[in-house]
Length: 214
Length: 421
Image (cartoon, rainbow over all chains, first blue to last red; front, side):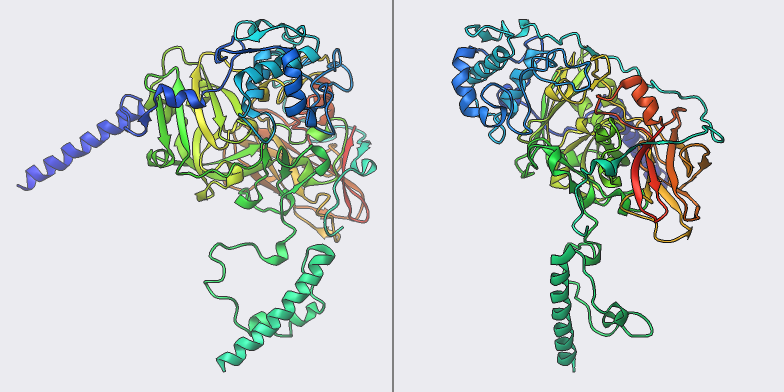
């Protein structure tokens, strides 16, 4: 009796161990969560890739997008994408990336037109995200590309033409991370330099917000 | 008797409150008119009269005397506070854990106020079985708790052209460190079953920015977590309540808050946040795109511009060091602008991808000094100077400024952010 009880306990322990190790290897599942239906996924699956995957049927032109842009976007970005205040500028900056003041815009910097469609559709207009229709999104995207002289006013932007829009800075990025790119030798600890001269002082700029008690 | 005590306590409490309000208008800090009344040999009020009961503060808050220990933002930095950042007051913190209410915030569409009952996490794409989880489902998986720092890639981004913000909070406060609790992402991916072509994930937030970042599968299967708690309590709304993706050691923008969807794919998505933002423009105009890891970095948090020297003599220099590539191995401190370095004492525990507190005993003679700290991690990496960083990257990369910080302490004890040769 005593012996069989211990045998049962031992067998039970083995079974628990088997379940745990199988789960760790991904062979055993916890049975949590429900199957996500295609309809459920479709409502949230809004991302678009550079190859066009995710772009829905629909279309728009810059000519059609101008009015929508002026109504939905110009309050922050300006009527021509020149920006209001500190909101993002959408045009210009060509040949500025190697200068002392790079201006990173859709035309000068963005490598893929798909990113523009994806971002407008998911996050714009600021404060009323995902309110634009598919056709409005195509039209606004076309208008912004047109403002950057990347498509003609009557160019029809759709799921087939958008991935083919040539973005000027397409080859301006390197995917590989070259770091570490600074010396990693055993560092000097004594008499490392003869002079430590102050080159910049933050107080001279005087842009630090004052504290309440200052 | 009891009534009399209570009434006296109430009257005195009212007087204190009035003084506090008056002082608050002056500077936000409670300043007592007659502070000596609370000092020995006098018996202070709090030693005589009853304090508040256990029902007064169901969720406690810091002492009113610590009201200056708050997150702060730089209004001119961004167009709107909903798409902006504030900063952790590193200069006022001790140890390596950041209190939940002081963890810096970076939002792109404001704080999503998510009802957990309606929140879902969907995993789909190149998986055997697309799944949708409730928050309760996620909490039923075997949990793990881990300390990790979280640093914005743009921490220190204002300092590339020269010393700009005269504040430890503003130069280094886009970092925090808490104990996270959640479920390994690989557990969730195994539940859905990865297809052979799976190489990348897209993580998406439920906020009004629909924040999205591509994450390589290797990292997802290595140490990523889906967290629901920080420092023992549920995530704060501003930190992604009810679910947040953790990408330990990598730039904070990838730690998708209000996580609602993970799509498995075979290539990166090149979202706005990984093309037009969070890419590093070099001097020649070319940009590094996928620079995810946060390299080793450190900063002295006391003294610093907010913590001036008040007297000569003994003062323990203290600060924080961290590396996204592993554990901190050593921190050196210099008091002469990098001519000579002294090994600091690392407070334990020293954990990988976590803030590490360091100390150096110091006696200030009252002379002008240049303070610096230099971190090294277990990979052998050495924190560079800003001069070395500019030499290879120019001044326009905005992100990944992990350079050595210099504080100038002048003869009157004031501390200033400077950059040196």
